[in-house]
Amino acid sequence: FSTAPLIAAGCIMMRKCHLNTCPVGVATQDPVLRKRFKGTPEHVINFFFYVAEEVRALLAEMGYTHLDQIIGDTELLEKRALIQHWKARGLDFSRMFFKPDAPHEAVHWTERQKHPIDDVLDRKL
Image (cartoon, rainbow, N blue to C red; front, top):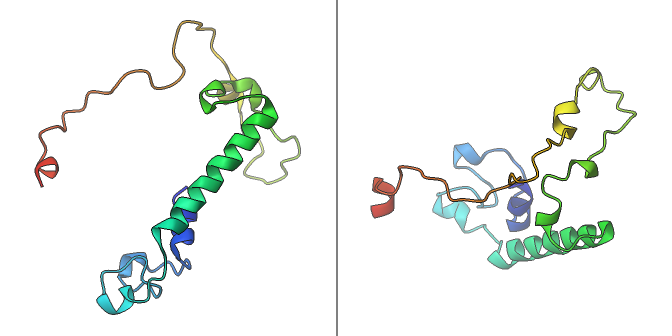
């Protein structure tokens, strides 16, 4: 999901990010190349606003108002019947489409995780 915001920022997918030679200045520390960067934060913000707008429209089309309402709702999933690719043959989606009978169990994040990273050096820098 991170490629699309990079495109919105001006990335042209040269696949040179790791070489510090990005020709449009998106992924480089070279001052000469960075001057070529024409992107703005507003381009990325607009991209996410449009993604959110489309998600809201799709949810409304399905009769929902919040994304939380469809999390864990496996009845919304369906397998395309005519997948002809050789890699897709024999795939078993039954575990993905299975909905366990657990009425009192949460299907998404409900409590903060406890990670021992509060005192790492990065927090102090």
